[in-house]
Length: 582
Image 1 (cartoon, helix red, strand yellow):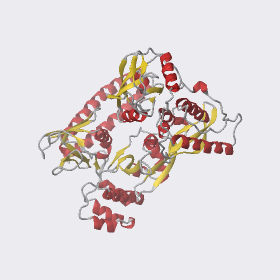
Image 2 (cartoon, one colour):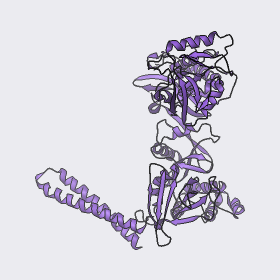
Image 3 (cartoon, rainbow, N blue to C red):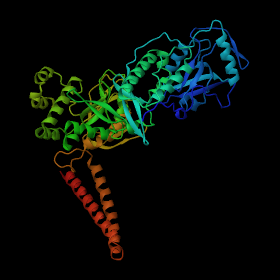
Image 4 (cartoon, helix red, strand yellow):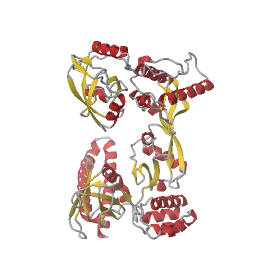
């Protein structure tokens, strides 16, 4: 049962741990690369500018902001920063005598890389400096608690969790209605201790009292409300809410959360309604999509035509990989104005196939209709001169008429990517659009304004294409209908999406295995590979059959398996040969 044990043995390092590393008494530079938990340290110091000079390691300095806490294992600790380090420069800017706000603002403006000039002190020197500062008659609070803000943080529910045969209660913390993390009462106690040690002159609200016995549901709910009030008051002070202590507390914990907790995940449908699924927190995209498929009663044929996307901005949605965790994306975007960043959208680009499905399934028909309405309204489909006509047809009862009209417009059933650098047309930027028939390039400037007319490259004319880990997608066009051209596009979105687009762009029209967008040369190369593999399997099959009379039945099963694979390869080879002839 749940009890209020302190669990200090599991709490790790506390904020008042003393340094054990050898410190550098001279001014030195520390370079910190930002990690998931930020830079991993807190800054403390005066809130007013100027002040009396003091001796540090035999040198005189104006009052300096100092490192008051370091996240264990964080970016700052890995870079060699020590608690008590005095900060002289932030990214080359002198901050001697600077205020706490000035230094914090410079650190926040650093991006992902922070360069600090610091001077380290011994524990005894640190105590001497701190006591000198505290005894100063003009000393003030090292933090400015006057700046307030409203943070939409709540603790709406709690739930029981069983981990390693231990049963306990966790309290679910939400930000703007989305689940961030879940914490035990003992972790709230630990947070309270850390905050009081760091912000020692701040008057913190009291935590709900401990209780040595198991709590009833009503008592647990009362504790939940008090914990929510505690977080609301603490996070209303900007300097506390933005501290690494609070940020680390609100980060996801891998101790028990991922494998044990159920969370709510909201998914936006094409008709702008939403579905809330209850899934395990570590569920990947494939598992979440199967859950959504069951909720919407989608058959397998329909499910293959749609996929889950992440809303990047108003003009681009990124398809989520099957192994990605949608809930992690969901909570990362809690500050967005949209109700959710997870969308259900089409993942079928073959319009002929779409028409066939619409005739068989009214639910699919409605999904494609509402998807088309959204694409027109968001400008993804170019419907110049036809907007009034489309508005008149924008009714689910007239979905067939609407789709028949909009399917003829540029941009329908296509994926357009944000502007990206390219080597096309003299190292300009380009907007890439991919459809079932072609890849389209639109030259543009850095802010996406088009330059000239778009150029289409039909898939049969594209000789080769490649993706790299450096975020480069390249292709070569050398068909009979266009002159030879090589293009490189520098975009992680395109790079990752082209791998995902391979299957839907190879989707079926008449025969599932014969319709292909590869060039004839690529198909002939694939046939040769199949032939080589079949020849190799034939040699293995002959060897196995010769050994069969003197061995057990296992080679017979292996031979049967090889025969089945060879037949499948031969069928694929014949299908591609027929496609080339056509």
